Image (cartoon, rainbow, N blue to C red):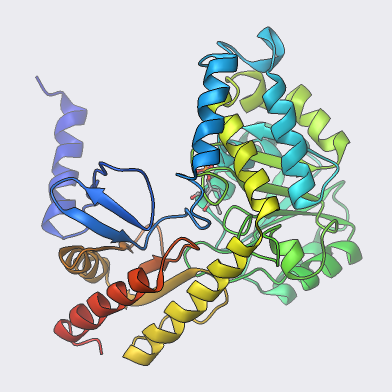
Length: 399
Ligand SMILES: Cc1ncc(COP(=O)(O)O)c(C=O)c1O
């Protein structure tokens, strides 16, 4: 029996299908890795995973998760302050803080939750939060929620435009707290935030800088400590949010890393902490092991950088014009959403899984396929993927 809502959204879904913008879920029958077994397809090369360091199926990471399950069971069965928190959460939080170079950290079930908690808990009616135009959806929604909950003022500055930010901060000199939020690495472009300029501007205006390093933790800097390490500025970002669901094991979870005062205050007041369960201990134990593997083998980060540079260079040599950059996120802009989805399907027919992104994830007319490289890719994996790009690019008249 369908109701009026079912009928309305069924019509919309039909429209997605008719216009070629429907997303399809591909089911994997093997762990995440540079090559996976995809249901109905067999082996495919993955070029669209955030498994940047190949840690999601690393034996030490998987074994730690199993030990976590044995030691602590399935979970806390309630929120942390009500019925206790596991020692593995404390160990994980110490490791996250150590990795990114802050005094403390607090874990959340996702970075989405961490981003939702940050402005909504730390700001009030007398404050202002300013967000880069291209920030991740979790930051945007976190700010919308903060505005609704706290009545703080909000503003957006043009992407990476320090002049615009300077003007907006100048206009906000009477606010009690000015908070600036930016992605460390912008996930759809692969661009790195201009951290030295942002830190200088925030200092000039006595503003708090929040950096979401979800695509930078484990990726940027010589040892994977993130955007701050990339610029030689570890310890200079006020608040870092990041995910455990990408380079650090890939399961789930996120954290806020900051001063002990900020983390303690979030423990007291952040609604996703007060009204939602903690990370499952399996996940906390796996993420902790992932950090330890990274700390013991920073050569993974070097390999990641070399793989990304090779793939970018070879795509250029084939005649594609990926967005320039230094990160393992390598987007090829195609224009219309349907074109990106079609190219992604053609690549999958050639055994390469690269997702096509269109509106509303990226602006209208800037749909793209986005390649993401891992340290676990071999030259053979990358060369096979490049051969598929050459074949599909030629058929589509792109090269
Ligand atoms: C920049 C950024 N922030 C936050 C998130 C959300 O992370 P999580 O999956 O841990 O909620 C993502 C995930 O796509 C992201 O790319």
